[in-house]
Every structure is written in C-alpha cells, then in structure tokens.
Image 1 (cartoon, rainbow, N blue to C red):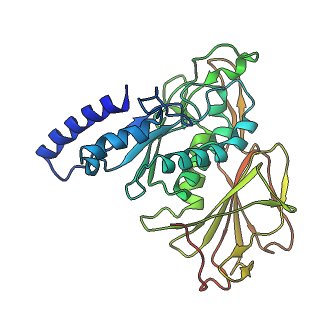
Image 2 (image 1 turned 90 degrees about the horizontal axis):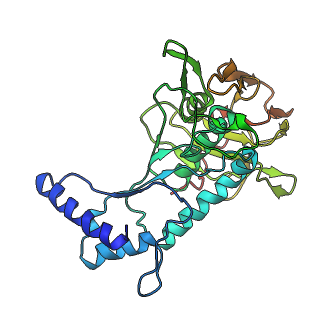
Amino acid sequence: MSPEHYGALYMQFAKVVHEIDPTLITGGPGFQSEVEGWNTFPDANGERSWMKRFLSCLRERKRLDDFGFFSFEWYPFDALCEPPAGQLIEHPGLMKRVFKRLDRDGVPRNIPWILSEYGYSSFAGRVEVELPAALLNAEIVAQFLTLGGKTAYYYGLEPNTVIRELDGCARQDRLWGNLMMFQTGPNEDVKWLLPAYYGAEMLVEEWAEPTNAPHQLFHATVMEGEKVSRDVTAYVVRRPDNRWAVMILNKTADDLGLKQVRFKNMTTRVSDWNGPIEVIQYSPLQYVWQANGANGHPTRSKPPKHFLAHDGFTSEITIPPMSISVIRGPGLVHSSQTYRRLP
C-alpha cells in the first residue's frame, strides 16, 4: 500500500478513535519485514522512503499529532540455512543503519519507538532453539534500548513444538525449529526451557534489576588489543540498586579472557569495583540441542551458572564461546563522579 493511501486510512481511523476517547494514543505503522529497506515505488519527485512520505502526508494535513508512537517488528534474518555466527556479528551494524535511516527520514524522537514483535526470523529454523537465539534476542533488546527505543515485545511466549517452514537447505537439520521459550512434550505440557527463555532471564533478572524503577544505560566498547571487536559486544547499565552490570555477548567459537572492565567519565578512568564481582554465564555448558526433525529436543538444558570473582580482575575471567555473560558489581570507588549517560 502506498504511504499516501495508508495515511488517508490512518487519519480516518485516528479521527474516529479520538472522537470516542481523546486520551487514546494512535501510532504505527507496524512494519513487518524488510527491516533495512522500508521503501516503496517512487513518487513524482522520485522519493521512495515510505516513512518520509507517510509523515509528509500527515504533516500537510496538520495531523502529525495523531502519530503518537512509532512501531515496527524486528525479524532481521531469513537466511536460516546460513551459519548464525556471521549474522550475530552483522546485527549491531544493521540496527544502527536502520535507526540512522529512520532519523534521516524524520521519524520523531519525542514519541515512543516500540518493537511490537521481535525474534530471530519470521520463519522457523533450528537456530531459534539454540544458543544464537538467546544472544540475538538479548542484543536486540539491549541495543534497541541503548539507541533510544522505548519498549520491546518478544514473539513466542506460549509453549510450542518445532516445525518446518522452509526448503532448500543442504543440511535438513537446520530447517526444524520455532520462535519459542518453552517446548512441549508428548502430553503438551512444558517439558524443556529453551535458550530464548534463559536469554530473557539473563537480560531482565541479571543484567537489569527486576524492579519498576529507572535504569541508566551507557555506551560500551570491547577492545581486542588496539582494535574494536565486532565478534564480542557489550552493554552497560547502572541499576537502581547502584550496581553496575556489563552484559557481554561472545559470538565466536572460542573461549575469551576478559582482562578488565573500565568506566570512563568526562575526565578520568575508573576501574575499581567497590566489592566482589558477580559473574553469571549461559553457554554450551548449560545447553545442547539434539536435532531429530519434528522430534528434536534439548539433551541438556540448565540455568545459567553463577559464581564470584573474589579477586576482581587480578586474573582473567573466561568468557565461553557462543555465550551471554553478565559481570556485575556493587558500585565503583568513584561512583559519585559524573558519567555521560545515554539520552
């Protein structure tokens, strides 16, 4: 549908809704796919951006106030036959490009941006029931919030079974999977907890504090020597309990040694944690999937591992391959100093 036709229908609906209840907020458009494109056929001026033309349609009719939130779905990868490591590495750059594109197209930043659904793919595949799903889901939410997003809704909360939707894989075992946190057994009860569940638990109970209070997000960079890593990403939050938490996503097939975590404020660097460091990790040590067509299931599904790094960073902390790690401390020695918080 052209953005002008959609805009005309949108304004009719918004008018009726607000006549019933002026306090209700309308928004959209609820993009479903093609996350990096969102183009349409060119208009008379050659403009192909769907959002730019939709917003122009509202603006020309002085109806921009009817656009109270911006919503879209986020299923970044459909090539589920491909090895997932490269897709995990590609994802942060993909989301950054989309946000820059939407900013350039004029999507307002003073309204909430909402992921109405998110997941690995809009199709079913084995990668969705393995560890890459946990990593990607956690990164989708953490990066979305870090870039200024408001709310994200995971698709696949209900218990489910593995299905096959695609063809064409050289390896047929990559075709069976599903977007789900819980897999049912023969009696249709929940029998296995999947990586999507444990990845969400790591995000909302270990990295974030599970409480209804503001968190402060900060930019993070992972360095390998003098180079910025693309294979390993990190997200930092200062929680309401004044503890700092760093979520580290290792997308490689190798163990990595974490040597230090440094916090940089406006003038100085601070590297001292004010107490013992907690480490929570979810990795292949906790989860293994056994592919078997429609009968595939985990052979190992354990909760994340917890331990204390009593000596801080006097020795390396091992970050397992294809894993989520949360490094958490009770505060910094110089935590009263001013840090550059994300807007």
